[in-house]
Image 1: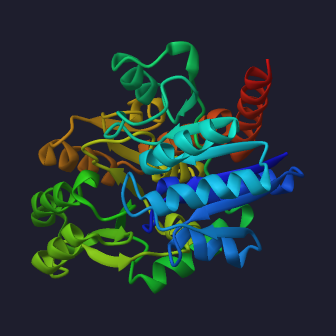
Image 2: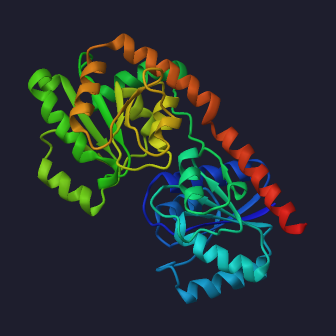
Image 3: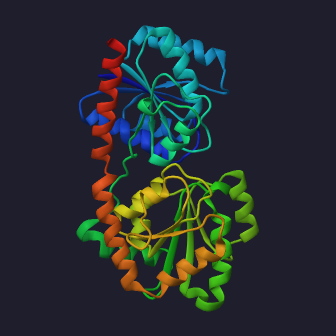
Length: 357
């Protein structure tokens, strides 16, 4: 099967990592994958490093006519079996170009914030049941919207985890007695980093320097302003990191106090590493965490609740271990890349057969 993936973003985030994992998995399964993406973007650079063919498109706005005409010509010349778009701008271009070239189309919706411009008469993949409910409530056909959890890489390190944990904690300046709290992901207002800082201001009088908060993720303009205001007082700012399994090995608690989510990749990776998790009850988060079973859910926009949950886990290592063990079991059951790839290929085949009928 020849597949064209389309994504317009320059940033580094969950959708971009999902696309990369999908491309690698499809190629490993014997399919030919090419990608349309902006030149210089994170995903373009990583795909080229891995040997994928990338077609450069600006996708500067929802209706960049030059990009649209170039995409139509590409589909006419290459005759892909299917086009798979990610995020809303790619869906806009993909919907028009595939309609004019009679190419099967699948579009993945990764979040709850954009929904108006996805195809309403073509196959749509929602990354969580929450995203599907959101789309259906806005008029999308239940029959055309399927749910496929984005697979997460396995960040568990097996028999090496103890050695890696000791080394990683040493590099981060952590003693064996310290409690390391990690928030991994793009530093943006929607992710709630300001709430994490507020929670630490509550906890530091009790714990002093024995509890440490780490932020690992690319900073948006909002994130850079927050970083400047904090100045390293409440958090250690690591920037974007490519060694997430090593950071997770060092972690005791992973938090995700987001204000909105489709299905956070960072939580699935934390689950794969068997970490105790705390997250705001928004979007698809309850599809990862069952509170009290494999993590703790808190109300959104509630720094006090976040501080209380961190406090609860910080002084209860046995609870952290139990929650982390159950989190790993949930990952194996629902969120592996293998499961995602199998379900996506089924969706592709169904879409191609439906268009041919």
